[in-house]
Image (cartoon, rainbow, N blue to C red; front, side):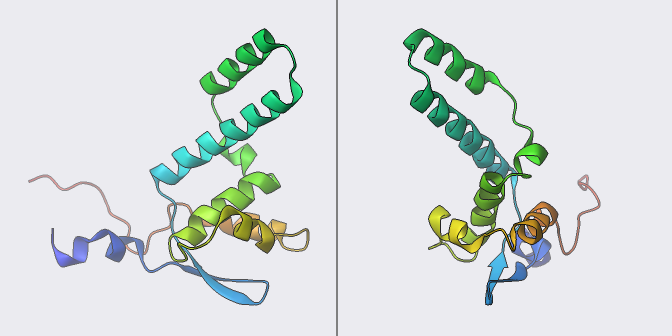
Length: 136
């Protein structure tokens, strides 16, 4: 692979953002991040079912429904939990020590709309977008 085609050169060096007076770099989302997001949302739904449903048969049915369901990422990114998870995934690319709890502490009612907008706009942004696959 030629030097100019390396992924880090295509994607760039992160999106700088100031959150609560501190500078961070956010990484660009990839397909694995979206898959992790879907699994996280399903896991959160299953957790609620386990905590609120008494009947085991009903619990199994509800959990199976969650596992087979699709996740609407745009809808999930409109809530605090979704914004926090995706902020965490973006932060981890340049601050690998960040935990989900750390990301949660960065978001409050004063900045959730701004952070949500940032998170929604960093997915897929590239510095030098590829025009398409080249045939050899």
